[in-house]
Image 1: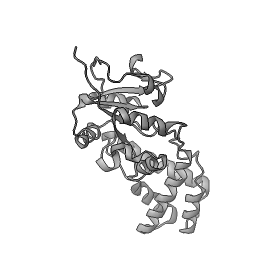
Image 2: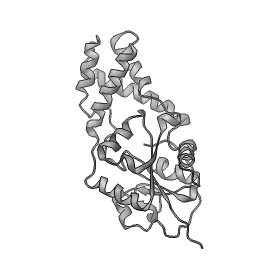
Image 3: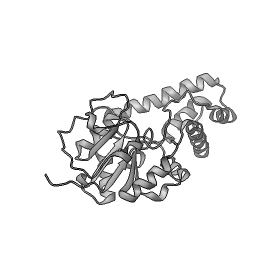
Length: 251
């Protein structure tokens, strides 16, 4: 069998490049709550957390039906209206989105050595990020803070594509922007359906960060962390098995 060359690495972001908590209640949202209070809200802090969890959860549930992505502005506008009893002004919504993302970001951490790893990988492969997110600025801002923004040929975000992983459109958008065929790409992420089954369904090979061996991915396709790529010969010959079906979304 002829060697199949990998020229591009497509990387998930949250849980792959950075560590994070997806929680909407564990972080300290005091800044966002204080903003609501200044806008006229009278609900308690705990009620604010419950409202946020319920509102975002409802949007996520609807999005899971067809993988249509939503913007932070949509649930934020609803949270504001239900908190302050009126339709919020655009500048109030924008301020809340900025504050909420800042609070949520307190649980995002950069693994030691990640920037160096990405620089090393960029010497061998072209890099891209393909991420589910409700904000068009969140991932690019983190890449800049990590000092690696210029290493990536493109950053493909679900909020801009309008579809979240594992919808085929987001992977195809990445391939189109990069001008490559699926066989030239390798996807690496930490969620089975979004980062393994999804890419494989459109012909992109994938490795899954699955240190607990909790998914059906074969052992040969598992990593403990992204750092395991240092020990993998990604230009080796690959045998592509039948792609698994795609179910619910993942981040």
